[in-house]
Amino acid sequence: MLPIKFLGGVLAISSGMMLGREGPMVQMGGTVGIFIARGIGSTRAQLRVLMAAGAAAGLATAFNAPIAGGVFVLEELLQTFNPRYAIATLLASASGFLSARMLVDTNQEFVTGPISGSNLTDIPWYLVAGLVCGLAGTAYTHYILATLNIADRIGISRAKRCMIVGAGVGLLAWFYPTVVGGGDNLTQSALLGAGTLGGVALMLAIRIVSAPICYAAGTPGGIFAPMLVVGTGLGLLLTRLGETLFGFGPVGGSLAVVCMAAFFAAVVQAPVTGLVLTAEMTGATAMLPASLAACAIAMSIPMLLASPPVYEALAKRKSRLAKRRKVYLFAKK
Image (tube, rainbow, N blue to C red; front, side, top):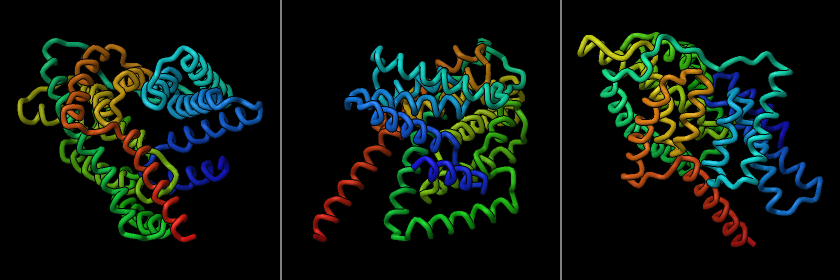
């Protein structure tokens, strides 16, 4: 599994598919944890701990965010802050991050342009950002699930899906080369506050529509990084709208930082991870109070609309498909 995930992830992302590197890395980290657990004859409970620890290390390495790597596994995957799990995941996350730093010269993932901090005059903007991210995040979650369901109903093999989607991405890359791929360049531009209103709107439309389609194709890759692109893009779009309609708005990348955390909180429904991840990846700790308020509003929207967290919905979907396959194979016998 490790070589397949590694090579598949490299080929998919390098070819321009709008997927994140964190998906294969989390899976590879979890697989390493399983190998270790089986090698030392661990119990089922110990295997769960080691698998979670490996996943945390993979995520920490992918984003240069050791705290967020551990917190994400505890908050979203395990949904417990049991001390035993916490120690294992945080230690593995830290060791993975330090190992990566020794092998590769890793720095902070993103830099930001001028930010306003928790300026009182910008509070209405942050509240609006939370509302927009909550609604957009809820819609995005359902769109991801809808694309997967449509892909299954079409009945085309995974290989053909990959070829069709890959051809579409290649065509898109011919006309708009900067919008394809994992999207780190787009996230960075948004955090610097770079882009016109029309350009940002076009980029968002392409990424929102295309990234879930790439995921539904079945190639190795995650939706984590694409979510950050959409979140920061929404923040920059709101900034440009404010400047166009009212002649003013929050400074530089302020709203991009806030929406990065808020959109993540709405889709994943893991606000602590969103806050920590944003702070680690951007270094914009001055935006934490504003991000906290926006995350609270953003997460309340999907909860009120009874929309599930995206990873929970994906896990349940995978479980249902596995059960159907077992029933089908049993019926064939």
